[in-house]
Length: 343
Ligand SMILES: C[S@@+](CC[C@H](N)C(=O)[O-])C[C@H]1O[C@@H](n2cnc3c(N)ncnc32)[C@H](O)[C@@H]1O
Image 1 (cartoon, rainbow, N blue to C red):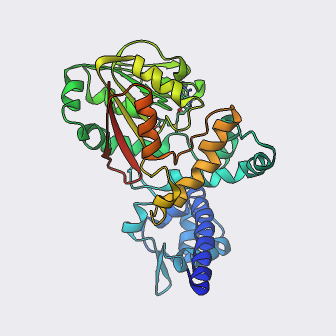
Image 2 (image 1 turned 30 degrees about the horizontal axis):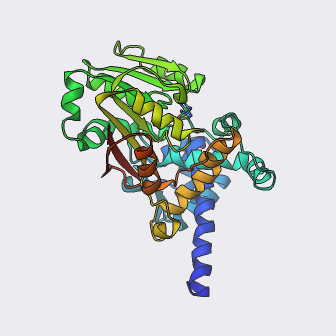
């Protein structure tokens, strides 16, 4: 990159960080929701949101010059085609991811200490920062499941939806707050769904969210000790940050029926950084991997595969775990792929 192009690139990078912080403010103060109700002057918007106009005006300055709002004859507008990425109960809304990313600022001193001293930041350290910045665990994927789980993700594997309709024993590994099971158990009442997660707190939330679903149950436990027999085991974004992913994959293989399916959704990148240059999602995912996946695994003395372990490494590990047939499919999200793994 030429010097002047790099200077512009870096300025855009700083602007992106600043706008990320201000959009978080817009979410928590209710400014974005108020703006979505229609064009307003800064005074009108401040009144609508019950805020001080001087702050709102400066915030709007950043929103307009940052390309989020438009300004016409003194009226500030959040266009509907922008609002859908910042508000609402759809998979397009990036606010949950934005809030989670902002919350990582809280653990930076611990992360930096780990660069020097080794070890890592434990998962428990994130909770208070997520809470302070209004991020809720699992929210990023909640709407993705609602919109894409059945047709987009499961639909990518021929025959899977028919199998689930007929009735199958399904385990969701690293189920988190149970968002995938909440959708699947409703869509496939003849199948029985078990969610497994090591985190007691998220399992409690999963149980609450599915208490009306008789075919959904949850267990607190370590996937490295998985036993039982299942027709389908799913793992959504839950293998790369395992402390012992090799052990977990072997356990998954051992807990599958002979004609069973391991359906693993993970990140869609190469294991080799040079192949990820130019991928518009790569720098963001490496950053998230560093600030969460890698360090939380290192905190437990884990393998620290990181979110960017890549399709080459994942395929190798799946083969080592005893999966003879693995194919990698595109998913409804470009940053994820689906590993269809059979014994
Ligand atoms: C990135 S979250 C994904 C959660 C969920 N699949 C979703 O899509 O919302 C990864 C989950 O794996 C869980 N996890 C990590 N290590 C685990 C282990 N050894 N056994 C079971 N669950 C584990 C974490 O507690 C976390 O809820």
